[in-house]
Image 1 (cartoon, one colour):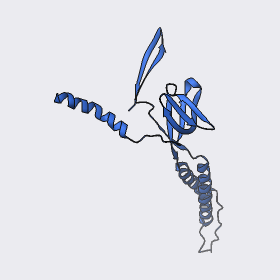
Image 2 (cartoon, helix red, strand yellow):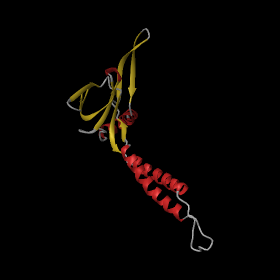
Image 3 (cartoon, helix red, strand yellow):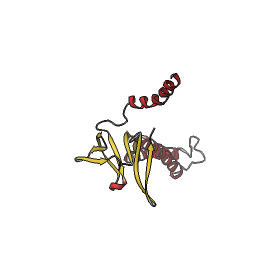
Image 4 (cartoon, helix red, strand yellow):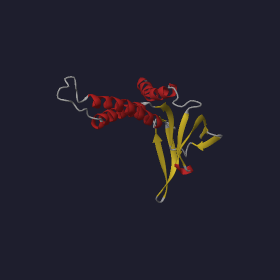
Length: 175
């Protein structure tokens, strides 16, 4: 009897953990729905609720989807600042290099002791660094991307699917 009880605890413990974990989607979260059989590909809306076998989201009005038709559900994790930082960095490096290469050269006279031929190029490189960094940051801001995370639809989904010569049963398990 003890062995059966231990086996039951080992089998059911992961399931109870899954039940007590925080839900990955909450009311009002931005979600992206994919349901190819309904002609829906990455439809972005606000999450309302899941009741029975129906997913309800809000865009201009409530939209209902059969969970059996939904192949993928993603929740937004917010916008990333990475493109802004990357754009500013790449723009600054490119601008500094262009300013250094394309900057005017200073003609030094033979008796000019304080003359340094790279002074105008360094000033051009500094202008290029600032201008390129600003332009790169603006481009990166325009290209900010949104991070999406997959949401398991059901821990166990069983459906009947057409196969060559008849019907088959398909089972998917999400962890």
